[in-house]
Image (cartoon, rainbow, N blue to C red; front, side, top):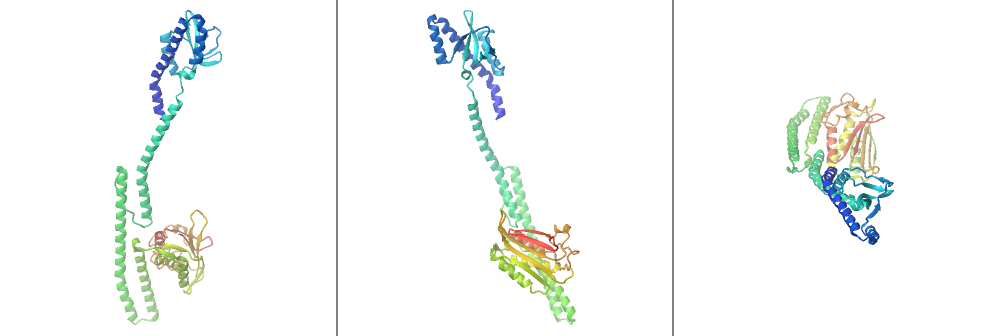
Length: 417
């Protein structure tokens, strides 16, 4: 708009100067003719009519007149050049005469010099409102174009962002439309291909893990039968049965981790009752000492089996790795409450053991599959999938998990739904 306005002012300056000069020359010539050809006794009345009706005043030019010359703008220079070419080089100009503002121009009648005064706005009627109107229309049209262009760009980006969020939650988004500008078309096509590849990889992984687990359970069942029938000592039989049960549990974790996300059905689950039941079952083990604080009747949409597995995995993780130093017992604090403060109220759960904790350098990788920290957490005889399954279930339910070492010792897991 600024460039257009500057260009327009440059282009229209000369025609405008010619128009103003022609108007002034016409006024001066008509006024001279009227005064020259009017009867002497009528001149006073003529001058009064010119002043009252046309805003034209005539003054005698005096040598002691105090004049202020107009500002030498490019427009005035062109106007001055045109007028002097018609009225003579001796024509003088002023924007203020004896402290009276206006447009002053000198002319001659029969050798006498006069001043002709015009109102300034008559010759230069400010164009601010006109240009303001043009600017407003231009701005309005520009904003409409900007909204159209913004929607053209932002709508595909919004769809891509929503699809990425859905993919991050473990859901398969609908294919993005492969249309529009080439960059957006290529981006959507690449995203759709990536989704297809991820779905295929996830499906292949599930099939492979399920196949391996199924193939392993057949010889495991045969080995369990052989152990029962073999002539073994009691300790040997119990040891082999324990090893086989552990292997069967690891296979079960493989199957849980490989379960497709689409297979989960959500209902309204009372996690207060479910968590209390899980704690009651775990408390039957002689080494478990669990203190709990659970709010009543807390419900969320979810899958009851998945949430039970979530709670059970966290308690089992503490049972295996969270023994209190110098003791064979495992102490745990479990809390579940509805959190009302803050901008996003929700459900907050915490699971804390009183073990030796985890090195801070290993915290970031604990949630990855097949990760175990054997140095600091004793009896590391699992598959390393327990916390990975926990995180997968939490994400599937739209929650967040944070793991850390408690300031007073032990390992802490905080879950927010």
